[in-house]
Image (cartoon, rainbow, N blue to C red; front, side):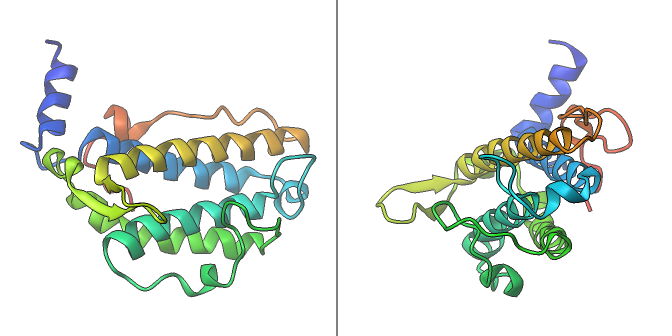
Amino acid sequence: MSSDAATDATIDSGASTHPPRLVRLLWDAFDELERVAGALPAPGRGRAIGRLNAGSWIVAHLAKQQDDYWNVGVQGLDPDVWLLKQRVGFGDEPSVPDFAEAVAAFGRVRARAIPYLRALRGEDLDAVVRRRPGSSGEQTAGELLSRSVGHCFAHTGELAAIASLVGAPDLGVPARLMHSTGRGSAAAGADPR
């Protein structure tokens, strides 16, 4: 086994003080969303382009999902007050929330979720943490993490496409995945904010 694989096996087994790679990949997804949102030119922030969502809707939508999962659903915290007023769920009529408020809400949601996520270990990923809305099924921490990672990266790609359509250079999504690869200043276990 390579030293990287051995290190990752130790980290992911819960024998380490570092969160599992799946948690660290979510931190990378959070970083990428914030990076791309910060580079999104103004024309892409507050209006939909073709069948793509408005940039502000994407950021608010992801903030609401992460708040629902990690803060409200798993930790039992109160929902973010600003997000409660936004219609940014799947199936809602298209809306255009304030972009700066959406970015700020994502930052608040992230800050409240990180302590819980930081405490997760490999053995925690199979724990049932919530029931699926409208069904009798249960979801584990690992399932919510997988869904969150995919959802964040998918919508971050949508933001990057919007940026390109309004004249921004290629944003290179995803960029370096510093938390999950253990390379760079955000190595495994580094503070994700």
